[in-house]
Structures are given as C-alpha cells and as structure tokens.
Length: 366
Image (cartoon, rainbow, N blue to C red; front, side, top):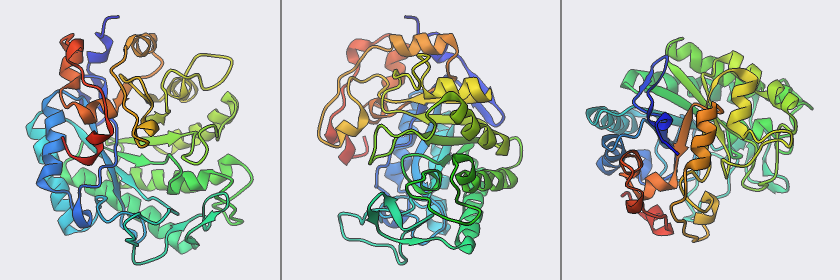
C-alpha cells in the first residue's frame, strides 16, 4: 500500500508536524539522579534529524517525592533536570523536529530492583498497586490537590522551555490509571465512586489544571489504556457507551489528542466493529487520536522484556486504517528505539534495510 497518508502534514493548535509518525514514549532510565544528559539529548535529536514527525519523551516525573521508583528516571522539575530538558528541546528543534514531554506520576509501585527507594512512601488513591499488592499509602485530599498543581507546573515548564505540546500519562496502571480502576480506587470521598465517571474526577482536574497553565492554544495529549500490566484483558469500558461516558468528560476538560495504547494496534476494541481503541476514541469524541501497539514489528512490546526479538512486519493494515480515517497519528516504539532511521527508510521504500528489535536495544541509547 502507498504510505502517502503517513507522510502528510498534521496541524493542531501548537503542533505543526511534517508527517503522522510519532515516537512513542519509552522508559530508558539513562538520567542519573533524574537529570537528562547530553546523551539523552543526542538520542532524541537523532530521531528528529531522521524525520520523526513528533517525539514524545520517555515518562518524566512531576514534583512529588514519591512520583518515581527509579533514580535514573528523568524529572520534570528542579533546576538541573529542567536545564537538561532545555538542552533536549534545543537539540530537537535544531534538527527541525517537534517534541513534547510525557509528564508522569507512577503512583503505588513495586520497589526498584536496585533497592533504591524514594524519601517518602509511594502514594495512590489507596495503598494498592493491584489487587492483593499493597506498597504505599492512600493520598489525602491535600496530597491530591498538591499533585494536581504539580502536573500543572510541569506543563507550564514544558511550554516555557519551548516544547511543542505536552502529554499526560494516564495509562498502564500508573497514578491516574489507579484512580480510574475500581480495584485500586476504593475511596469514599469525591475522588472515588462506584462508576468510572466518578473515579475520573482526579484525571479531569489534572487536565483542567494543565489547560489553565498552558492556555488554549497549547496542545494537550492524554495517554490512556484499557489493559494493565497485571491484567492484559482488563477493560475500563466494556461497551462503546461506557467508553463514551469515560472519554467525553476528559475531552471536555481540555484534551486535544487521545493517545490510545494497545499491545497490538490491529485488534478490535469491541465485537461489533473492527475499530481499534484509537478508532473508537475518535468516533465517540471527535478528537484527534494516536494509535500505537507493535507497529512495524512482528511481536508485541511486553515480550521484549522477556527477551523475545521481533522482526520487521508489513504496514499494510496500519495504512488501511489510517486511510480510512480511523486515527490521525501513528506512534512507533521499539522499531524507532532500535533504528533511528526507521522513518526515512519507510518514506524512501527501503524496507529491505529495516532492522528488527532485540532486547539489547533496551540497554543502550542508540
């Protein structure tokens, strides 16, 4: 199939992209004490120079003591870390790229394998990271208010530093997702509730605060998932009606683009249609969407952490759905992690030069 649509420009508020390809956020843990290095800047600018349309950073944590379980995850607060991110965006812009940070709070987490722990207990809507696993404390309403403001400050800093957009991480069982999930949100105050709509209050307030801090013209992306690391089959929304009731208030709060995480982009979200998560999100809200999930590779990304390799695969099904208008942007993860030139090879029809993915790509910044 022709890749013409994949290389059409995209514009929305502060975003002016040369094509529809997004570098997906991928945790790398190469920022000692939370400070991005020159190597991190070179890693991102190399992708910008190779014509990635939009780069979304690895998750970078907000100003809460226990927002991270890893000392080498980058911070998006503090003079040294923000100076590091300033160098990153300068390098990306010098390479004619566009970029947004993914701002993040992990919530209740497992302890890092190194034994490192933050100076305060992990925090979440409850003390649970998943059913049966407690490793922190429930946030007070004051904690929640301060966390909402910390998200807002991070977004304001992103705009001040010159980033082109900001993405809020609301997926994969981390803090915002822990508020969505009835298994981890057992609160009886205004941030809990029996329905997903009630449990969305925290996310809605984060989005509103981010919008307040960045203004109307700055693009806000929200990453969401149905699945959890502890339950791949889980769905917050089990029907289109439930999904609309979940997503529309988030859109109304200020989301411009939904980044819809799936393990495999080609899998239908509901039985009555072949639309995937991004396809349904766009249909139900009218907002732009990003699809993601094993794009360009034969295996899904979680298998990579078990040591499984993946080979290049056809983009025909992806292009069919993009041409049909199911989604607006396409996020590519491991293929771009292993090969900075992936976009130019696809554009120039050099598929014979595409590289596969191996676990070794996770242990260095290529």
